[in-house]
Length: 480
Image (cartoon, rainbow, N blue to C red):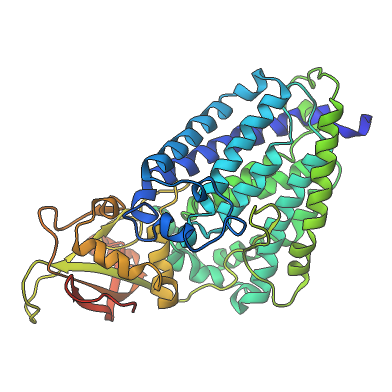
């Protein structure tokens, strides 16, 4: 089966595998450091409560069989250590079957986390990491040349990711069609970064070019990924440049970096490696028959499961992000089908005064990533994922996004729950818990150049009202 492998894609495989392993490591570390407050035994949405209500077949996970905070931490740190080993190239020093086992263990561990993570793990980059991680199991190591079919499946994944995002924009919001969405996006995106203020203040003609370039990158360039070399590598390079622009302008966890890693898998061919001054492809051993059989079976499975994402892409009622199986093998993707024109923020406050009066002094809880103080420059946190900060952005848009966990958050603050407080940057009541907490809703906007020079503030805000009125521990905490 001479067609089965292509040695000239050794570079793309190596870059993809190393990059994916690094992002796996980021994902596992993110889970290890945040799970106790989010889904731990004393977290906002505890895993034991979830597994008692949801059957294994609907959410397959090792934590369906056993859960404790200590066991979860051990699995998360095991995944981080395994990812680091893969990033260091350990699988290339092992037999092919052992390398596949290493990749499979990473996938199974992260699948187990996502499937009990509930709303905290309902983001597209979680599904994207699992789908890419599953395909990586069958990409081989230095024992064999890169399988053509698996490389094709990775390009198919990148195509669905980019083309789906492009379609949902055209279908979802008129500002993408009239090229004005970037007038607002840098200001209203979930977690602005340190350069977002500057991107927001680019001239409007530049914003229109940004939007037009996005359409080209997501609706036209993906088709060139299937073209012969060097056209496919050029298309991959354009995807990478577009994603680096997004990396610079905001914080989207590992979404942009994983898209870059997927694009790296399309780079290869003797023309490309020769133009880069790289050595020719190394000699590889013959491909074992059992490996050929597995790859063919996986390719057939992906083709069958692609029916649902393709149907979604062709539908006028396209869904932005969805997983069609509990194993998250072939998913549908999309981002920013609508762009907010106004930024809303929820500010959580507490007081230790025994009674609420007009003179009550409220102290603000400071989050690690989301906007709060006016003079704080938005931090760079990606590719790390601050899940609570992201959900606070969604909750500011609609109480529907907060119904399951916000009352538990307020109760945790009234109790000074240490696991939950570790999710924050600053607790204004380190000694004893507050008597009352409340949540206020504000409209935020980036300041102008003159305002920044005058008072050093990156943001200005307008009070809109109480989102959740003051509550005490002795009172029942209800959703907004």
